Image (cartoon, rainbow, N blue to C red; front, side, top):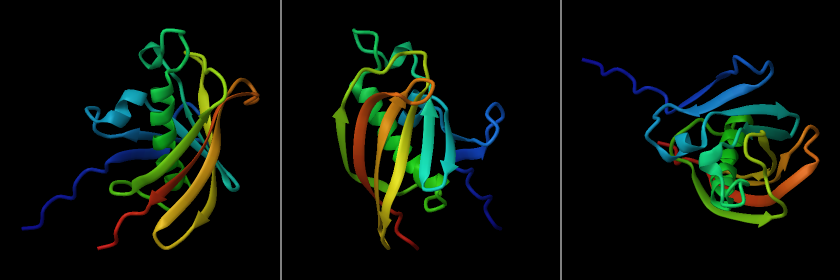
Length: 155
C-alpha cells in the first residue's frame, strides 16, 4: 500500500494581497521560522526581494527590530530567495556562514525587505549577498549581509 506524500514544508504560492509576489511561509507553526511571520518574495531579474513586517515581539528595548530578529530574518531570506530563484525547494539545505553588518535601526510595524543577490551557484553551494532596507523606496539601510548556503544532498 502506497503511503500518502508528506505535506510540503513551506507554502510558496501567489500572494493573495500582493500581486506579483509569492507568499513564503512555513507550514508548521511550531517551528522557529514561524516566529518571524509570513513573508513575501518577488524576483526582479537577478534580485530577490523578501519582505516581512516586524512586530512588537521582534523589538529590542529601543523599540527597533532586535538584531537577533534581523539575523533570523536574513537567514530565512537566503532560503526564500533560493526558492524564488528556482534553485531550492524546501527542507534540507543549510546555512554554512552568514556575515551581517548592522548599519542602522529598523522600525517596528513597517515592512523590512531583504534584497538578495545570487553571486554564484556551484554544484553544492549558493553564494549570496544583500541589504536589509526599509522605507518607501528602500532608502533606509538597516544592515548588509553575505552568506553561503549548501544545497540539499541529492538522493
